[in-house]
Image (cartoon, rainbow, N blue to C red; front, side):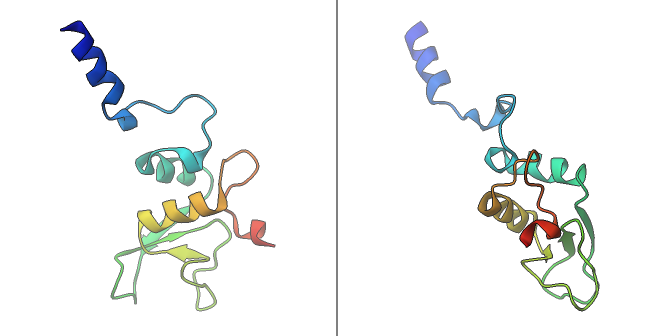
Amino acid sequence: DDDDDDDDDASGDSDDAPPPRGTPLWKRAPAEVWNELRKHGWTYAPAKKDLKYVWHYRRPGCNAGADATFGVDYFGTEEQVVAFIKKKKVDLKTTFGHLDEDE
């Protein structure tokens, strides 16, 4: 019986466990990603003229005007933000997802 319980723990869903200390942001759970990004200057605001998205999630340095580019300066969902963070390997130590990092 004890062996069965151990097997369940080993094969169980480990997403509920906190990440080990020092885990880069891009390797963390999606719910944790947005919370951490907000601490580093990422913002969100209602998508006023966008019929597809309710919110716009903005990178630090984003000019919310007509010059802003969807998918580069801002995103329509938290899932899109997480995909960007993974693509750029944002770790909040050397990369933060700021616009000035794109140069």
